[in-house]
Amino acid sequence: MSEIERVDVLVFGSGTAGKLTAWTSASEGLRTAVVERGLIGGSCPNIACLPTKNVIHSAKVADFVRHDRDFGSGTAPASIEMAEVRARKRQMVDGLVSMHLAKYKESGAEIIFGEGSFVGPRTIQVRLNNGGVRTLEGERVFLNLGTHAAIPDIPGLRAAKPLTHVEALELDRLPSHLIVLGGGYVGLEFAQAFARFGSRVTVLERGPQLLPREDKDVADSLIDFLHLDGVDVRLNVKVAQVEGSSGNSVRLTLATSEGKSLLEGSDILVATGRIPNTEKIGLDKTGVATDASGYIQVNERLETTATGIWALGECAGSPQFTHVSEDDFRIVQANLHGGSRNTRDRLIPFCLFTDPEIARVGLNENEAVAAGRPYRVTKLPMQAVLRARSLSETRGFMKALVNHETDEILGFTAVGPHAGEVLAVVQTAMMGKLPYTALRDAVFTHPTMAEGLGPLFGQVPARP
Image 1: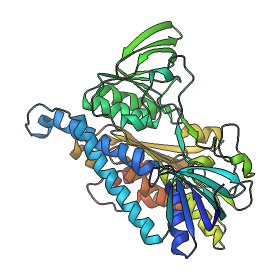
Image 2: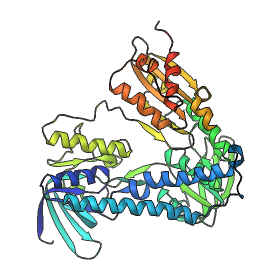
Image 3: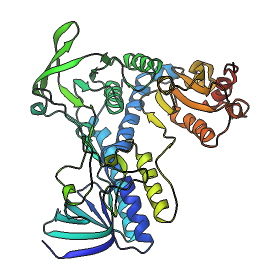
Image 4: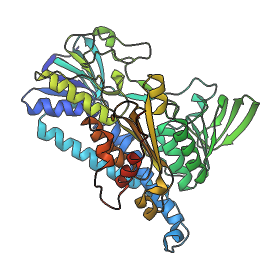
């Protein structure tokens, strides 16, 4: 083993929480080192959130061009050059990487590229990407290991070398028939985008609805939207076997309640869940415990079972959103500086970036019923929002849940254009403990999407 280098702060993984921990610690004068396999800034700016939204926007532009006559414009028939879509995405990623490197230089934190593995309680040995070995011991260690796409144990699937989101973002060609396994966030965003680029797309979901945690009216609306883009959605379908090679020709044997059938396509995209990156990194040498799925066990302060080691982000079982990883960082930093923050009762929003978007914060009806929380519900179709009419994007609705006995807002869902931005207004009101009447009586700018909150909350049923 190489000579041990001792640092104040040792960060394993440079994702959102990891990089923020590193930059902050180094700027405070602490000797800080980050061990990273290769993605500067983690998955979000390189292979996940931001690149995906970049490609989705390219697909929306393609859809606008395809329907240009609806807006009074006339162009030549739209053509899609996936190599140019990829180039635009890569240009954005390169800019983000440069920004991250500048942040590391400015803060004084050292980023070390290589494969890391624990060889002691707070000691990591790194096999450097450019050769050689370094061994580092941290007074404090922060694990920000992230997750990777799960490949289901379906006969023939792994041998078919399917796409995950990583490979899908690097395609310079258009699949003739893309088969998407999974009806969650990743699969649905890619399904719609590739359909708009011109691929034939089929989504296969094992369960009875897309987005299984959402209310049925939300899932049903999403299917309607996808159908308008030509996406074939099949529910209650199990893939029994895969033959062939993704990128060339594949044949899937499908099993349903009605029997077996065959589905042929050119490519498979797997989007069926995530696995934490906690295997084969020597966690057994640290005293850090994991659960049956490999996620690191932490308390509400994100402390692991080992003294001096914290876990943040997805590897700690936190909701798999960049904004949650950032909040994990804030919790740990606040506590290290004498605060008392925890992960309990966080109001966590999410947004699915299909077109239209689907955004939610707080409880939906399914969750309210399960939790035994009586509620009043109010719902407004998007066609009642004048801004949506001006955009010719009137699909969807807004829905809010209000406490049965008080004026507390329990939850809000928006299905429509700029839903994620409208959600932030309601989330702010919920964080401030404002009654729904504050939004009902607010003066919103006309015409904006947020203006719809007035009539939405204006029709909340009276208390019993």
